[in-house]
Image (cartoon, rainbow, N blue to C red):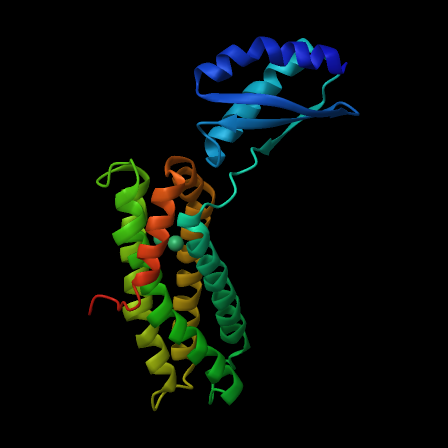
Length: 248
Ligand SMILES: [Fe+2]
Ligand SMILES: [Fe+2]
């Protein structure tokens, strides 16, 4: 059966290569075929799903014993120097979001904010006000302009737009909701609900944003940038030491 699957994939390969991708057989077991899809559309879930469906339909037709086709993504290139620090900062941001979610969930429905929860919120607020705008500046001012991609459309325009949305959430909405929580009517149920809502919005947008950069934009940057240019960019990013949100 493996030989027939391999032969069918071989026939399909010119078509997939014509679209800038490739397919490689990983395993055949109990009617389940696992393939690795590589190429131009790696990291784009929609394209991978379409390609997987196409491969599956073709294999069902050619090898009737096939029950299911599973696709694994291509191994992403090892992080290059231009993105290594940014990826590390993403992990930090995800840790902060997790702590913030826990703090928001632990808030009482009304009444005074317990000191430990207040302290956890303060730590997260500090990261959102200082480290995050710095991170965005490294991307906006150093990494993005170095890529061979248009700025006005496509992924870079989308990332810049999301930075603006996040700047408004982190620089305006979150501080306002946090201040309301600490104010005289801070324990009111609607203030606590409003704070939770901002934390939830912020977490949703920032997590999605980080996933797109980690799995689409950064692998592309690592492939595109020659090592000497990437190292130069990394040094330039490190030299940016201070950033604030544009005053709202
Ligand atoms: Fe970003
Ligand atoms: Fe980022």
